[in-house]
Structure formats: C-alpha cells, structure tokens
Image 1 (spheres, rainbow, N blue to C red):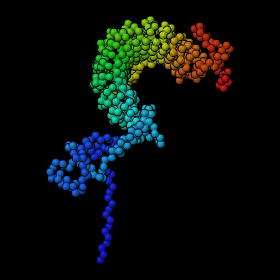
Image 2: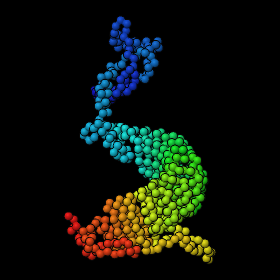
Image 3: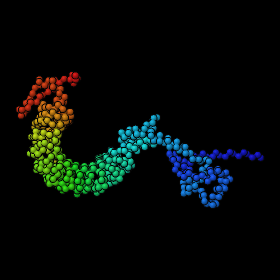
Length: 569
C-alpha cells in the first residue's frame, strides 16, 4: 500500500524582532546608543567565524567559563557576543525615528491638519478645567498640550461635584505645579483631607477660596485650619465658607493678609497672631445659641493685628461693650468698618467709633439701633473722608438723619437706607414668649419697642457726588425729590406708598432704577422722568405744591401720553 504524502509543516510564526538595543538593552525608538563598542583583534579585523568554529567556541566557552552566555540586560563584562544575522541593530532606523519624533513633538493633529503645539496649548487655556481634561483624552499630542496647560496654570476655578469629592483634587492639583490661586465651589463635603491635599499639591499657593453649596457640609475643625495656615508660608488670602465646626480659631501666620470666614458659631477661643493682616471678615450665624465672646476677640485684635485696615463682623452678639473693646484695641488705621446686625449698638457705640477711627472711608452699621443723633456725630467726625455710609435696617433713623448725612458729607458716593423708613415696623423678637395653656405653650407677642415711623414722610436729597442711593423697603416715604447730577443707580424696591405725583428725579446720569414691588403708575412716572419723555411739554404741565410749600413737583399727564413710535426720531 502506497504511503500518503506528509502534510507540509505549519508556517513559522512571524517574529516581530527585538525592540531593544543589542549593545545597551535600552528601547530603540528615540535612542542613541552609548554602550561600549567591541575592540578589534590585534592583527586586524576579526574573521567571521564559520558555523563549525562558532559551535566550537560555544562549547569551549561553556567548558572554560571565561565567556559566559549572558542576558540581554547584563553588561558586567566589556566583551559582547556578536549579534545573530536575524537581529542586526539598525542605527540608521533609530536616527530616522528620532527625527520623526522631533517633528511629531512640534505639531499636533487637529482634524486633517497639523497645528503647532504652542498654538494648541494657547487654545486649551481658553477652556475650563473640565474642557482641558476632556481634551487630554483625544490623543497623545492633545494630552501633552493639556499637560503644558496644567503646568503653566497660575489660577484655577473648579466646581467639585458631590460624586467627585476629594479624588478630583488629588488627581488634578499635582499637575498644577505653578498654581498660586485656587477657587473651589464645593458641592461635596470638605474635611481635613481636602486641606491636606491642597497643602501637599500646591507648594506656592497664595490665595485659597472655598465656597460651600447648600447641601455640602464643611467639617474642617479649628485645629485643621490652624495646621494648614501654619504650614503654608506663602498663603496671603484665605476665604472659607460654612465654618460652623471650627469651635476654636487659633491662627499664626506672618504672610496672611486677608481672612474671610463665614457661618461661624460659638467660638470658645479666638486668637489670631497675624501681624501683616489688613482685612478681616467674620460672619456668625444668626442663632440664639451663639456664645462667642466678641469683647475678648476685639481686645485680642489690637495686640496681634495692629495693621488691620478693613474689618467686617456680622453677629447678633455685637453690643456697645464690644465696640468699646475695639476702641481700647487702638486700631487707628481702620479705614473700613462694618458692624452689622448688632441691634444692641446705640449712639454710645458711635461715640466710641468716632474716637478710635479718625479716617474712616466706609461705615456700615446696618441693623443697629442708632438714631439721628448718632448720624450727626458721624457727619461731624468724617466730613472729608467718609464716602460710603450704610444704615439699612436702622428703625430709629428718620428722614432728618438721612438728609443731614447727604448735606454734611460732601464726599459721600454711596448711601443705603433700606428698610429704615418703614411704615410697619415689626419687632424681630416677636414670636413664642411664655405662658401655659392646657399643658402647652401659649403664644404671647411682645409689645414692639422699636420706633414706628409715620406713614407720610417726604425725603429731599441733594448731593453733587452721590452715585448710588438705596431706599429699598422705605414704605413710609410718600414724596421723594432727588437732585444728584452724578447719580447712576437708584433702588426704590418695595416703596409701596411713594406717590407717582410726588416724585421728582433730576439725575441726568441715571442708568439703573430698581422699582420691583412698586405701583404701575409709579413705574410709569419713573420711566417718563428718566427717559425725559415729557421734556418738550414741560412748560405746559400743571404743578402741585408739596406739603411744606417750598418744592413744586410736575405732574405728567398720562392720559395724553403719545405712542412710543412717535417719540422715536
């Protein structure tokens, strides 16, 4: 029986060759070999060994042990084995690949075109952080350009979602080695881990702002904040919101100049040893359980922060004693002072402010109980320096005090009297008080101790430099005359009793008027006077004398108003 022919042997699998250099073992691509070159024989070039001699040499080396077979990455001996004919090193290919790599590094693919990487990096700088992160996943060239953007970034504003957490900061901040300003909008919780990540990843950080969303919780304690401030020797601006878990405030820094902390509650200890601090803002929560000793806080500021120039404190614990402690602190360099929501602050506190702060430019006593006499003391003390005066929510201030301020403060540019001239003043302490009825709590409303403003008041303001005037919620005003050539912003929101026929605005530069919650007739009168729609018919308009018999207000005839199309030239 004839034997069948043997099947052909299977094809030999294709080998991809060696990617490492035969002399030094490093990858070939982009590599220039610096390994030792084999020395020639003394009599000239060494002859090429025959297969028999090669096998004999191999057996001899195996027997003698002088020339051991080595791994590709073993270079202890100077001698090297000759490469096999199948795996010859190609130096020319390496050089060509290196040249091609240089060309690739100079450009990046954008569609079907090549763009210089410098131009691409400049384009990516216009994007937000998430846009740059998305661009890094397109290709290797785009990723290199994105890395260049991160390395050169000096300012970063980032919104951290609740699903990302501190992991996003840990992955992104180490790339920004030159970062000096960081602004975080946190929708996730913040704790000591967040501060540690920022401190480790940003060695040259100068400004840090952390804003908390409504659902996020700030779990940073006073000790965590103290360690962070003491470790960051370059930090000069620190603004953090939602600081309800601090408990203590013990900061020591020679570089910190601006400190903003909000939502503070019941600080048991407050020490700030920051000699170069010039701006301080502390906002406390409006809770009855807040027991922060503001007298001790004010007294300590004079010993440790003697260069303080701007101070803002918002707390219902503010009182005359706290302001008196501020006077004893001898902070005579203050130019901006804001003490708001202190209903216990009276004219006695104003006298302390006048004695301790000779050159105030901004004074905010909103929510206090000062009267027109206190406004008079302010006018006498700062006639040439005060440019911004805010007296909102001051129920004891009347139109007399407001007119006195505008008449005796020639440098005044901003005036806020919102809710001060209110017809129906409600006591903030109204609510559940005491009493028992069938084993429960009976609601007994306290009698209002605040001064009730008369419902019909006229306000006359004439000033040459005033630019912003706010009368929001002044429902006690029914007649208003404003003659301010530089005024460009007027707030009349919720001035419900202001009569349109008793309104006169002589403000040629007025641009913004806020009148939400006002009568439609009043809004129409404001529009007519601001747009000068009745300037041509001004001599024929009837006039009405005000109650004082001194001022006349022109009455626009709304029934004769022409269509808007006829007014356009």
